[in-house]
Image (cartoon, rainbow, N blue to C red; front, side, top):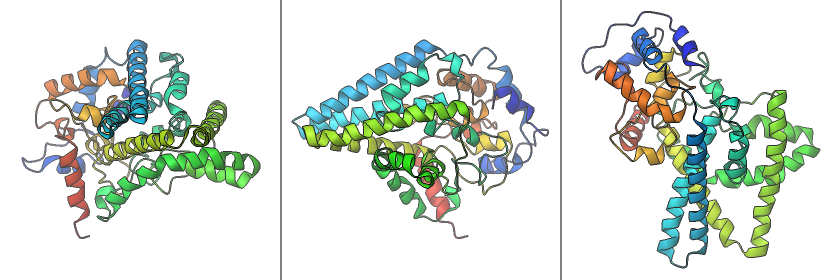
Length: 370
């Protein structure tokens, strides 16, 4: 969805601001069926000169992140000191995590804006970490559809704040086994699916999307995506067997370190996902403003969010307002909107202090007797 399309979807005049103390929850109720026209208009007018992806920024950021990540991973494997190995492992987690999250940009930025970037990312990060871009392309954009966000058809939404308390730790712990599951998918199920059509259908519909909604079933890919799926799955199949074979040739320590690092990356990403939204919608279609208020910004001055929500994801609510805005322009767009609309505005209601308060908020919500 482009910013202009988001603006055009506004369906009513902005309601009166809620009374002091009602907070963001009241605003979400107010804007469930009617958009804040002032917010949408400001987002359009104040960012007209932004929105052009800069290849030099993307390539430099990705290259340095991957170089640092793989270098630190090698250090963790080769280190003789446990503390040095742990320090290298932490650096590897943060750097590879940042490199991996460029998959989010790939699903939004026009292909001709970054020539060769999709191929380069898949070769540098996607296939080595067994998360090629086809697993997100065509899936994440459904999360941004005006009538699909927060509904049962949204692959990336669950009403986590309205679920049982045990659902949150389960949601996090499951991510720790993702990389092992991906190895099984590519090493075993992909070749088996080539021989057994029913397995292939199962793998595609249930195991080919980075989704959190267990009811989501992926539809058939179009011709262009199908071509990318073929070579990316072939690459994932070959690389998964290289990893397995390496254990018999050079020992199991390198593979175990890799599994540990990528598993921590997956858990960190799941924690980020847990606080990317407020998860309070029970399946009803929402306006653009309501979607924005159900999403989360964690802007400066705090610096830690840049580590756990890199590549623009600390501005996740703003991203839902302007999905096609390149990540390097989001900080400036945020500054302009905050300055123009001020404190206690609808825009300000989506700004939060950090991960810990957000996790606590969701945890408290799950403990409410319903």
